Image 1: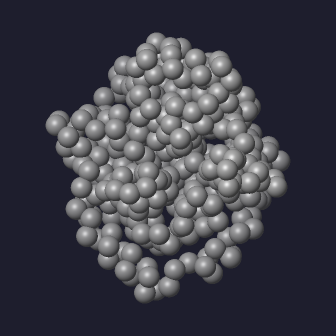
Image 2: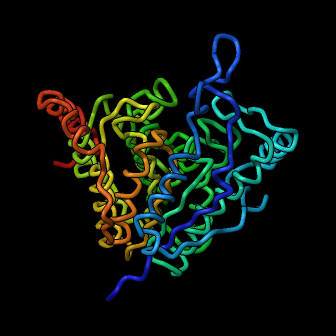
Length: 370
């Protein structure tokens, strides 16, 4: 049977979200000088350059390109209380500001964030309802750090969590959310911490963001949800081998045991070896291999129902090549694009001794399967 085109959900307007004048993640002022170029780490350029690379390489033609409507207040309330929505909307209408120091925003951001959430929900619902088997959504602003009542880490709405609730309403009973963003998916975790029907897995750099103990192995859920939250903190400096070991020996067995009816991937690409907000050494082939693995899991467990949501990733020169590898696997298409950073990053992979230590640490994870 020939697979229909996967769907690709994108809207240029989401790239117009801005956190205001900053130097990487610090607002300009005091001792923080204005940057000579660029600005806040959450620039639209990684995602804009990806879309350009897709268009020029011809990969866009392998997808059914769609957009979506912004989510309504009622739809956003699947996760967020009305009080938070009102506070965000009021400050957005007043020209912007911050409801949390790690999530500044400008005027008009409420509507753009609702559109970003709408793209993700539409992708998930289209797969849930059988309109397509696989989907990819560009989400900006991102969502995996956002708590129900508090934005955080460049995230204004809990985009994936809202979409999961919509899919449950549409009849999808068990959903696995795999987050391989380099930062802990604390917001998604919080939304489903007591829900036994949503498996949340976060593989992230240990203690990176939120800084400290967030994302610890011991956080496995509460109440009926005990065991349905899996954290895989990885030491800084890990690369291709450690990531694939964690996927094969912790992630894949956990998802298989859970037996989901749909898999959603939070495709943060900031574990790449040149990202400014992390200290990892993954590369495009790391993300390609993990995508290949999650496709196989979806085909074996849930009739191929798979949604990949691009969120983090701040190296504007390299994120497009990592995302392209994911999209090539998702669409079973190879372009003529070659990753110009790949050879260098392969040469920079950790030593055999370091990889051995990293894998030994992962092998002690309570969900590890030999």
